[in-house]
Image 1 (spheres, rainbow, N blue to C red):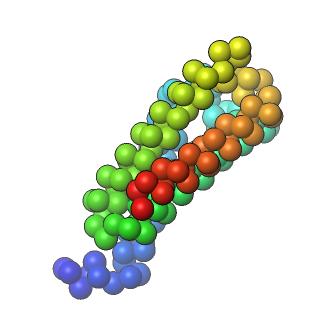
Image 2 (image 1 turned 180 degrees about the vertical axis):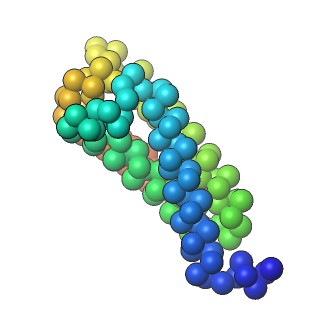
Image 3 (image 1 turned 30 degrees about the vertical axis):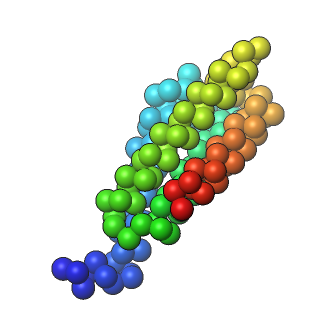
Length: 135
């Protein structure tokens, strides 16, 4: 079995599959904590939601990239990726808390592209910081 998991093609496919499943799961969690339905808003052409969602996808992917790079066990990679996601989620709540003059979710739902862009940049930026901590 060690020879099977030692094969780089198998390991790459395993990492890829696990990360895809984690992204789907984590997007479902973000869907629960936001006041809008991501995919409904994207279907309507809401660019702000698309930017915020894209930033979350990029952020989670970047966190897992760092986790894959430094951890040789699939389960360890998943554990650090989940931990990184939790930190990214906390960052989302901090962003909401730090803007008391307006509601982030309401602004993004109204297609305020400035807020959508900042949300995307925060997700991407925090993913680099989290990734550096994982590495």
